[in-house]
Each structure stands twice: as structure tokens, then as C-alpha cells.
Length: 104
Length: 320
Picture (cartoon, rainbow over the protein chains, first blue to last red):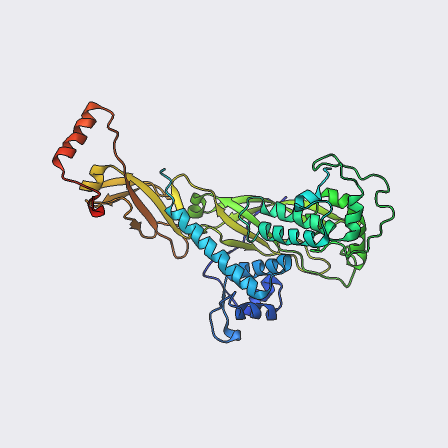
């Protein structure tokens, strides 16, 4: 339909989001994000809420958390646990991938 | 349109209790949830299970579905019999997730119209004032090659987005976007295209589009975040005596100095030759010493000479 190439924002480790940015980007209430932080599902830099800086992958974590809560009825402690386990699986998979030789 | 066997999808008998159905649903929803499942067709299966549960959890819909009879097989060509739902009253709340487009034509033909109609009301159509909602975000995966992460690339992406037509019916509209993939991306990273999700309702803003980067498996390289690994075959004499060899990298071949007494598996780091992100990754070359075949008399003679002249026992540390 359109031929013009679109350029998005690469959500890399150089992007920082404030609580307000994150709420807007995820259309979710601040209270809910604050709860995610309290459960350790998100770990922003900065001590005071006003100074919180989230990494760009928090955006993906919040989306995943929303879907887990909506689709599987998981409470926040469960969401935090699931996110941690998902991280660990991703790390293990990456390790496995670098260890598995292609030359076999 | 294909008949769908909701009991089979859910893995329960036709006379299963509501509790059994709920248990089966919860289990399958966890198994196929796209955020946690590693099954290739997780998303499709998750939708199917959601649709089956939408019908079977509601005693009215289930009864209506049941009276279609049990002689249908999944995949049979299906048209609802006239007045198939006579005598049933659907008072249920309609779609659960609000994502009507996720359900199959089969579901639509049985339960679709009245729910869409009940959903329309004051919410339908953008001409109605007073109702505004932000459009849904979309998530899609883009497959790229490792070389694309080095050079940047352009990908054309086709998306289906559910929209309400002017009759208030949910229709799937297809659109194609050309998207630039910047160089320096890594596996699993996301690109956000704001305003490229579903259109909003009323004066609500459009949703966003999130693209998740996934690398096609590569024949030579393995990737870990921004670092790239390459197994480099070496001859025994290159490894033992040292050499300068040509090594492929995703950005083109380079000359690499191999130190004498190089052993298999001891990584050599080429700093900054990994994926060129703002903080570039490294390229790790993993030496793999390979042996020439002893398939000629000359080759055999050379191996025999080594056997006689080199006192070498690679198992000495094993105490044998």
C-alpha cells in the first residue's frame, strides 16, 4: 500500500524511559507499573519514583506481564516469577546456541 | 468453512463437566501461551483453545454447539443448518478479550453476528461522538540474516488488522509496510513504530507496531547478543606452528594470525568485529583442529612417522 520505508525506534540499551513514558507507551496505569517494580518484575535505575529510569526492554516486560495477567489469570508475584524464568530460559538458550558447534 | 471440533481441541470428552473443561483450558492456555510456549504454532493453538473455551464454558453456547450433533469431523465442510439455534437465547457477554478477529469463520457463523451487533451500539463507527479508544498495539516478528544486522536492511511486512466497517462488522484489513531495519540490531530486540498499530476509535490515537528481530540460523556463525562466534577449522600444522589464515566475517574476510601451539576451543577475540551496535560486539573465532584423512600411502606414512617420533599421549592426565 505504501512504498515509503518506515523507520522505527530501536529499543536498545541506550534508550531510557521515565515512569510516565512507560505508562504512555503501554497504556497502563502508573499504579500497576509501580506494583511491578515492587514485585521486582521491573528494576528501574534511580531511587525516587520521580527519578526512575527504565530500560527499553521494560516495555516488552510490561507487555508480557499484561498478557500473562489477562490470559492466564496470573497474579503479580506469579508474573514476576514467570518473567524471571523466561529470562533464564532465554539465557540458557543463548548459551546453548554458542556452545553447539555447526561443524558436526 | 471447516467444522471445528471444540471438544477435540480442548482434549476433553463430549460429556466433560464444566470443571473438567475449565481445568483443560487452564492447562492448554499455559502450554500454548505465546509468551511462554516454545511450540512453533503456539499463537495459532492458543487462539484455537481460546475460541473452544469461549463456546464450551458458556452452557448456552455449548448446548447450541452440541445440538449440531457429534457426527461432524474437524475439517468437514460446514454450513450452519437453518434455525440451528432456535430455542436458544444468548445472554452471554460476548467476546472475552475484545479481539473478535481472533475467532474463526466457523465461530463467526454460529455466534458472531449477534455479538458483533451487541458490540456495535454506541461503540461502533467513528462517526459516533463520545467514544474514543486508543487502537490496539500490534506485535510481529521479522526474520533477518546476520549480515542484515551488519549492514542494515529493509523488510516488507504484511499485517492483518481488525477494523470495524461502516456496518459495525469486524473485518480484517491487510496492509503492507516497508520497514527499515537499522544496523546493529540483536536477536530479540524490538523496533517500535509508533502509530502503525490498529487505528483508534473516535479521536483515540492509533496503536503502535512492535517488531521483534529474529535471526535466521546461519550456516557458519552463531550469535549471542552482539557477539558472534565462528568455528574456524585449522590444520594440525597451522595450529602447531602458527600461521596467518584468511577468516570469513559477516563484514568480509580478514587475515588472522594464529599463534603457535594453538589448541582446539581456545577462543580468539576480534574486538569490535561483532554486530556493529553503538557498543559493537566482538567476533570470537573458535579454533577447531581437523585432521587430514589417512587415505593414501603417503598420508599413512606421515602419520606413522609422527607415531614413531612424537611421544604424545593425549590421555596422560586421565591416568591411563
